[in-house]
Length: 208
Image 1: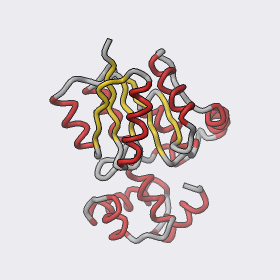
Image 2: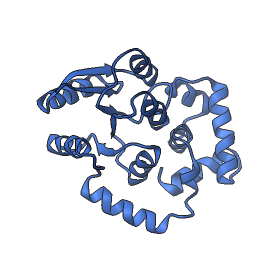
Image 3: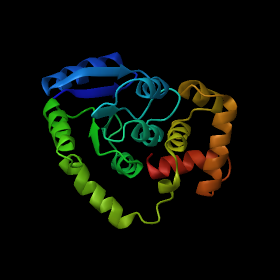
Image 4: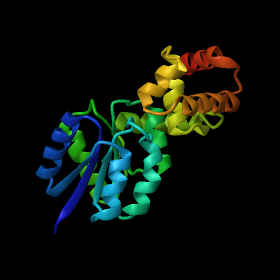
C-alpha cells in the first residue's frame, strides 16, 4: 500500500532530514513545499497525502493558519506540526487548530518516528514533557488572553517583543507594512494595551 507524505517547510535541510526519515518509515513519494501557498497548490492538483509535516513559521501565511485549508484539501491526512518553537502554548494551539501532533525540531529522530507511528495509528502525539506541561497549562490558563490570538498575531507580538519595528516585521514576514500595522492594531485591541511600547511590555511579561 502506497503511503504519501508532504513536508511543508522553508528550510532545505529540514526537507532532506524529514524525507529520509519518512522514506525509512515506508513513505514514497515524499512531496516538498517551501510555503503554504505552494503546498495548497500541490494539494489542489495532485493526490492527497496520508501525512503532512508542517512548520509553523513560513513565509506568507502562518503555519497554523494553514491547518484548516490543508484538512479541507486532504481530509484523511494526519498533520504533524514540526517547529523550532517548542513552547507548550504553541503545541496547544497546534492541536486546537486541528493538527494531530506537535514535535520540536530539537527532538531526536526516534521521537519523529514515534510521532509518525502514533499518527498512523489514529492517535495524537505530544512529547511526554509537553503533554504534562499542557495539562498544567490548561488547568490554569482559562483566562489567558493569548488564546484569542491568531498565528499571525502571535508572530507579530513575538517580533515586537524582540524590538522590531513594523517595517522590519513586514519585511521579515513577507507581508505589506499595512498588514503589519493592522495586525498591531488588532493586538492592542485584543490585549487591551496602548501603543507599541505596551505591546512590547506585554510580550516580554508573557514570554512569547
